[in-house]
Each structure stands twice: as structure tokens, then as C-alpha cells.
Length: 194
Image 1 (cartoon, rainbow, N blue to C red):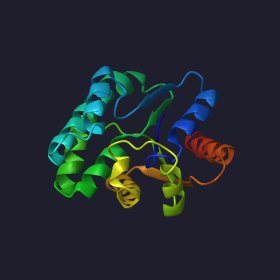
Image 2 (image 1 turned 120 degrees about the vertical axis):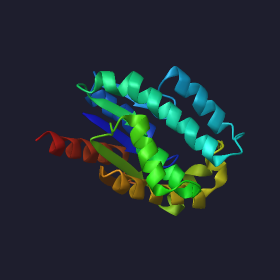
Image 3 (image 1 turned 180 degrees about the vertical axis):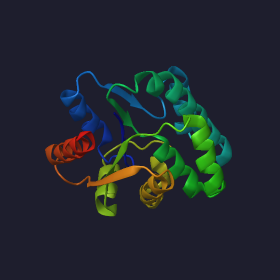
């Protein structure tokens, strides 16, 4: 089963992935962007905030996604795969850039992924207040420096992206305590296996 955890920066994806790894010790744990050697290089380029063209940024993410699907996801589809982000994030970011049509975004992502998407997507959702509190407590990267309004737009776009990709999205309140969030994810995963 291939699942993805989505959410804006500081939502708690890494924490939940660590918790899930305890429950599924044989799971393939991966991330997008940066889940392959090429992906790590692409991620560095994007996070260093040097790219001027939003289209170039989008195409770099697509290149990462294509490599990730071929190298990590496709060979392991029979196993449990837990991914920190997925095509859903890529589509969400592209939607808010507004430079590429929805149709092109969907088609290009289908091309990059060979139509392979997570069976279930979990969105760890933050309120504006909680997001601003969490951002104030860390050193910000290139994306986070764009501010809380930008990040909240991405959060809304993640919901829209899952709808456009026709994926099952489970929204979870990321302000809950860690154990409760883990329980909610596990219960939703059980529902898929029944």
C-alpha cells in the first residue's frame, strides 16, 4: 500500500512518518522531492531559492517525481510505502503559481508518475495561529520565507490537488497530540485494507 503524508512545513509530517515506521518496520520510507540521489540535488536547487522561473521550478519537481516513481515507488508497489509528500504537493504548488493551466499540470504529472499515485493521502492541517507559532520557532528555508499566507494557500491547494487527481484525502487536525494523530492515520489505513 502506497500512502503519502501531506502538509505544509511544520505540520508534523516527519514526526508522524517516524511513528508509522515503528508500526511498519519493513515499510519503504521515502520523500518527495529528494527521495533519490538525483532528487536530493534537485531539492537543493529549489530550496536555495535561486530559480527565477516558476516553470523551471515546476519542471525540476516533475523530473524529481519521475525519477522517484521509477526508482523507489514502482519496484516496491507490493510493499508498504510511506512517503513524505507526493504528486499532490507538486500539483498544489503548481496551482498557486498560476503560470500553468490545471489541465497541463494534471497531464504532466500523469506523464511523470505513469499514473501511479498514493492509494491514500493524509493531510496534516494547521491553523494560521499554529503555523505562525511553529514558524517563529525555527530557521526558515526558501519556501517558508514566503510567509504564512503563502503556506496556507498551499494547504488549501493540497485539498484541491487531491480532488483534481481523484485521490482519497484524509484531513487530520495537526494541532492534536502526536499519538492521537498517529492513531487516526492507522485507523484510516485499516479501513483501506478491510
